[in-house]
Length: 190
Picture 1 (cartoon, rainbow, N blue to C red):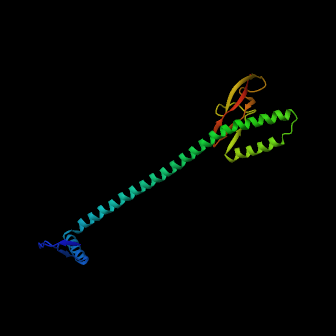
Picture 2 (cartoon, rainbow, N blue to C red):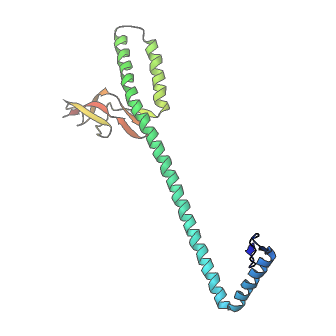
Picture 3 (spheres, rainbow, N blue to C red):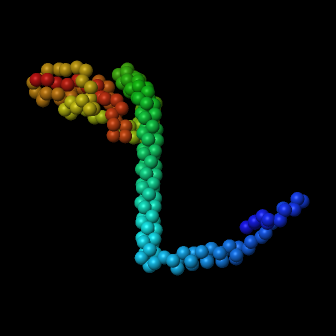
């Protein structure tokens, strides 16, 4: 540590050097004199105050860590939702093309045209759907559920229970446990 001296020399600025030992000695003396003046009860109170501060800081640190972990989880969840939404949007467009391939296969099969090439393409498309967790909704013979199906026609059939699905007009699909496209169905009424 440096101190300016009181001598007034215009050409030089005098500096007195104080050693670290002198600083530590003066600090130890002041601490010792303060400690001598405090009673045991006052020291215990100071200790309790310091313990309380430590507990308060520990609580704050734990709260900050919990907030950080919650933020990390929420951020991860938001990122996953965003990615899944984009995949679902893409898959909806892809499913239109997939449906066209299935219709083409049916037309060629009815015309007795070789459909081996289309079968291979459809297998690759099925693999892509599986890879991105896109699963078809099986509806035929099931009871109509508005969460999975969209009824666009009704037939009268006394032999079937009400709301039994008699025909799938367009396949529906589920992605990551939510419906991205409902199945278009025909249902029965008595």
